[in-house]
Structure formats: structure tokens, C-alpha cells
Amino acid sequence: MPDIAMPSRPRVLVVDDSSLVRLYCQSTLEKAGFEVEQAINGIEAMEKVLSEPFDLLIVDVNMPRMDGFTFLRSLRSGAGHAATIPALMISAESDMQDAADARAAGANFYLVKPVAQADLVRHACVLAGARL
View 1 (spheres, one colour):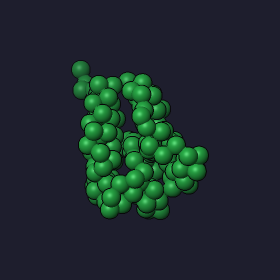
View 2 (view 1 turned 30 degrees about the horizontal axis):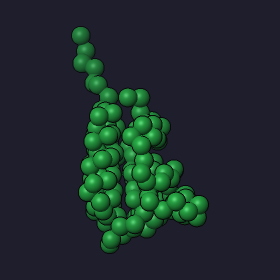
View 3 (view 1 turned 180 degrees about the horizontal axis):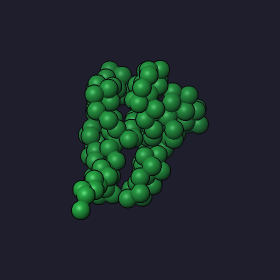
View 4 (view 1 turned 135 degrees about the horizontal axis):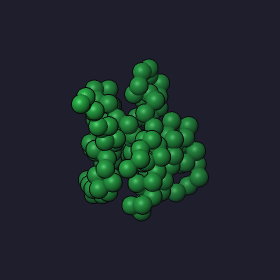
């Protein structure tokens, strides 16, 4: 009988300067079947995205060193797979302009914190193309 490779779990990079938010997202998504990595700002996220494959990015707006908008604009301006990874931007900013700025920077969707676990999982599944 031939070996059949099982599909790998979707890989998500959570980019947020808050350890509480990163742990919340990681715990929620791992329970749903995702593999989760973390980054504390856009610079660390860029290093990870350029060296490892990811199926989804979850990005905060306000972070030190490199904010989420700058990270996504930089990523989207590049070439290759990293420039096309779906991105879910999550922020405490609820102004409609923030959502528009997120889309302009390259986010596929924008959610306002706090995000319910079911909403996080649903959006992650849709954007990563996962059936978990």
C-alpha cells in the first residue's frame, strides 16, 4: 500500500506586541487545528515570513519598531509567495478609516478587538482555506 501524506496543519503567524493577545490567538487557533508561530513586531514578522512558509498572517496595527500597516505594505510590495499570504488585521482601533487603511496596506480583512474565539477561528479558516 502506498504512503499517503497527510495534509499539514495550516500555519499562522500572529504578530502583536501584546503577549496576552498572542497567547489568546495561539491557544484559540491551536485548539482549532492550526500550527501557530508568534512575532512581537513587524520586523520580527518580516524575518519569519521570508524564511518560513505561512498560510495566514494575523497582524496588529500598533506595534513598536514596525507597525502592522508598514509591515503589510512592505510585504505586499515584494515578490514571491510571501507577498500573497492572506492577512487578517486585528486592532483596538474601531474607526472606519483604520479598516480602510488596513485594506490599503494589504489586509484581506479587519477585525476590532476584542475578537471572540469563534470569530477568530471562522475568519482564520476562510482566509487560510482550511477545513478544520
